[in-house]
Length: 307
Image (cartoon, rainbow, N blue to C red):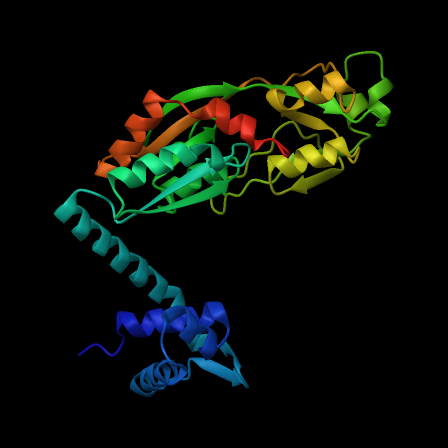
C-alpha cells in the first residue's frame, strides 16, 4: 500500500510555500493540529524527517525537498486529471487561464468577462500577465490556456495554434532633458551605445529570452513590464522604443521627444494562441468572442499608465 497520499503531498507543498504549519492551516482551512498530524504521520511512514522546525517557522530538509520536487508533478497531474474528467462531463473547463502581454491591459476585457460569467459561471477564470517569450512559454507549460496579444512568432516545435489579432507600432523617444534629445541626425549605434537603454525583462523560465535592440556592452536598465519602461523613459533615466499609441500625446505636449533612428523597430504582430487539440467549451467561447470583437486596440490604449 502506498504511504504517500495526494492530500499529504498537498499539505507538504502548502507548508513549504507558506513557511509554517499555521500558514498552511489557514490556506487549507484546517486546524494546525491536523496539519501537524499529517506531516508527523508521513514522516513516520517514510522513516525520514521532512521539515526542520525553528519555532513557528519551518524549512524543508533535503529529503523533504526531494519529495516535494517530484510530488508537485503528481499534484499537477492529479489536477489535470480532475479537470479533464469534469470537462468530459460538462464540456466546460473547471478553470481557465488567460495570459496577456504586459503592454496590454486585461481591464479592457471586463465586458467580455462579464458576458462569459453569464454563459458559464462554473468556470473559474484566472488572468495573468507575461512578457515576450514568457507569454508563449506559459501556454506550452500549461500555465495558461489562451494567449491574448502574444508578441512575435511563437517558438519552434509546434503544439499550439495561433492567429494574428493586430500589430503594435513603436516610436523611439527620450525625455526632453536627455543628452540624445538634441542630436540633430538620425541616431546610430555610435550615438546609442554611450547611453542607458531601458528594456523589458523577458518572463520566460525555460525558453530563450528575447533581447530586442540592445547593443553589446551597453548599460541597460531591465524593468518588469512596459508600463515601468514608459515611466522610466519619461523620467529621463534611459531611452528606447515605446508603443506609438502611448506616446503621441506626450510628444505633442513636449513630455517626450521623438527621435529618428538608423534602425527603426518594425511593428510587432500580436497573436491569439491556444494549445492544439484542446477544444473545451470555454476555449471555444473565448475564441469566438475575441474574434467577433477584437480587444487589442482597447487593451493597448488602457495599458498606458494613467490611461
